[in-house]
Amino acid sequence: MAAQPGGHQKPFHVVSPVLESLPLSKAAGTKVFMKLENVQPTGSFKIRGIGHLCQEAAKKGCRQFICSSGGNAGVAAAYAAKKLGLPITVVIPSTSGSIPKRKLEELGATVEVYGKAFDDANRRAQELLKTEGCVSIHPFDDPLVWQGHTSLVWELKDSLETKPDAIVLSVGGGGLLSGVVEGLHQVGWQDIPIIAAETQGAHSFQEALKAGQLVTLPDITSVAKCLGAKTVAARALECAQQCQIISQVVEDAEAVGAVEQFLDDERMLVEPACGAALATLYTGRLQRLQREGQLRTPLTSVVVVVCGGSNISSAQLRAMKGQLGIE
Ligand code: PLV
Image (tube, rainbow, N blue to C red):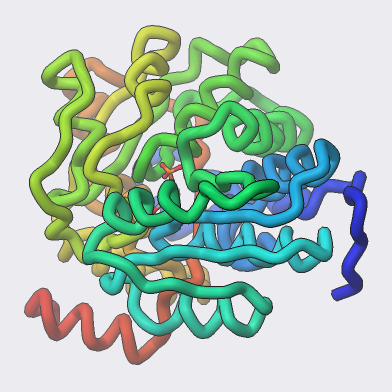
């Protein structure tokens, strides 16, 4: 990877494939298209928004990046920093485990492991920011990150023949959600309902929706550590005023079961953070929402954002199944 100091004009993400999934369509009772963000450089959609933020900061003369992350945003930032020829420090919580740490080091980032949850790592990153010329790379709470994520919707508009009837995605801190909502408005698709999936124990978005204000969870108890923002971005809550957002919380066992099912069905291994979105389709929740009148019947097609995630291995999947008592 050649370093390109002084700014890099081409985006770092790729135009990702949109494929119909027969197994997911069968499970959901409607045609399901997968937006395959797991094939992005560094394995998740994060490179869209984070890559954009890093490029913009580099153009303005930033000399160093400080990033806090549950894992994937940090790996995307380290990849972007390497391409831009700039140093980066990434702070991750201990619960992120060894995979992101190794990937970050391989990309040449300085890694600090701090605290148990993403929120602890984020506080530590704010302290480190005091050095001159440093720019903060937040994984989900930055307008430039949302702007970068909008490209996903433009690509959907380009590749789909008909407008989908719903978009299914995972919510951690709400950066992906905010970017998709912004993108839907840009392409004139703002009437598409969004199914926002979280896991129990990382369900800060649903709590905020219920309370009508931001809620901070006492702890992250879900195995989906990359959904583990104790508080979502304020923007995520505002999105609920601008689009129809249907919140769905799945159990960890459902998210991990979906990861395994998806591996068998589509031969791709994704994180439980992504499994949350897939689980809404595998567990009949879409049909339930139709019965409840929250989604129309019949549906022509839905899109699931296969957000990916690189903090997973076959051994880790086995270990999580054991931990959750899944056969
Ligand atoms: N992960 C963030 C926040 O973690 C991170 O630092 O990597 N799917 C995957 C695979 C993710 O990595 C994330 C976010 C999400 C979904 C949710 O995206 P968000 O935060 O924009 O809603 C704590």
